[in-house]
Length: 571
Image (tube, one colour):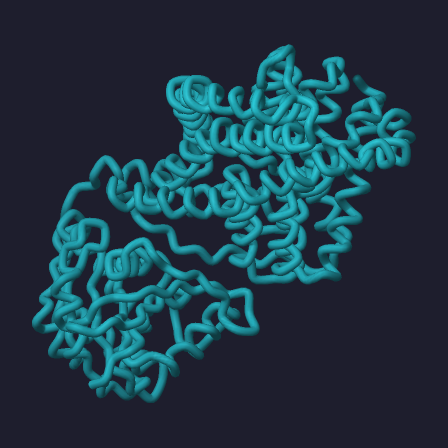
């Protein structure tokens, strides 16, 4: 059998992505299926002396598609040479429905009986030999987290067989599944583990909501602790002790009044380089994304990866489902919001998990306006926090009010309804260090590739505007809004321009303007709500289309005008 393309097919939350990671390593390509917004991952694997393509197709419960992702899965089955059907061994009966459908498709199949380590904890005993006989295709037990069975799976891929199943109806298929389960699986009584008791507590509203508040609070304490530790003990000393002397030597060589000095070093503050205020390409342009933002991104994605692998995020989605329905969304929309807190770009990409166009529009505009990224949060806490914690609280309370009010309005104005949440809740599992670190490495690589070029571009763009006196021209045009409605000096125009490139940099630029506390609060809030950064904006254009993105842009402008004006009046 000639094998060039292998498909990983299975229900959601059966560990397909972990198996995929074990087979391909970290170098993967994430693509959109042609003509859709549905993502799939592909990578290369050695099979014998050949390199073959592995594709992790979207998760599905059936080959009778009910959504766009399932349609893509069915379409991709026509393109594969072999299917690895990843099955949750702790939910064999439910998973076998898709397995039987695959065996009816006359495509070579091998079954990976995944999450094998959990079966003994749950009192489940499966006779793999008998299961092979019943299905007529190879069956291998695996544990993606620990790599158990992965080598055996690879060795047996060439043994994949075309199934000989044929059924006349759904009822007939379920009858066959029942007979297979009866012959291959035995259950024994066992007491609940501590993790299972915690599963029950964290899904019930009475106990689940306090647990959710506690987890989120502790998560952000850990994020802040790790982020500040990385900045104070690693990144700031590196810049101050190693990079600053080099930049001072370059500054002396270029001469303070030259054009190149203005571009690469920026302005000297009291004869020295200030990595936040100098705003040079090699000073602020490097320090902000690496010295200030990256530490918080590291800590955020580390905590997020642990919560994902532990299995908590789906429970949070179910707990918040009722609340999110009032905003025109269902509970799983909390996932783009959480990702947006780390970086708005993955948050914008994640709106594709929502089915309806109406949901995507509401989620995208809410995230772009009311969910600041971790980099911006860090800058707000660092800059505004110096004036007092209550002023930081005013900013985030304002964003929360905007999120609620805007969601309620959009839910009323936009026609349609929010579908009910259909979400598989996996059991709690102790995260594996290797898997968490691999995921962290992939996310950090993506952030650095996206952030550094845009920060450099923003600094270069702004320095050029300053040199050509274009900033002064824009300041005069927008002065009536900035000074009349928002109470800001016209010099703040430059921060709004930079904010479209990097919001965290723009917040940092408020520092040298000597603003009053009131102005600092208004400026920071407006920068949070008026536009997403250009990278997020481009992703949203791709996800929503130009027409819907223009509508969202209009909403953002109106919200920014109202927010700044109301804050100016109240404060």
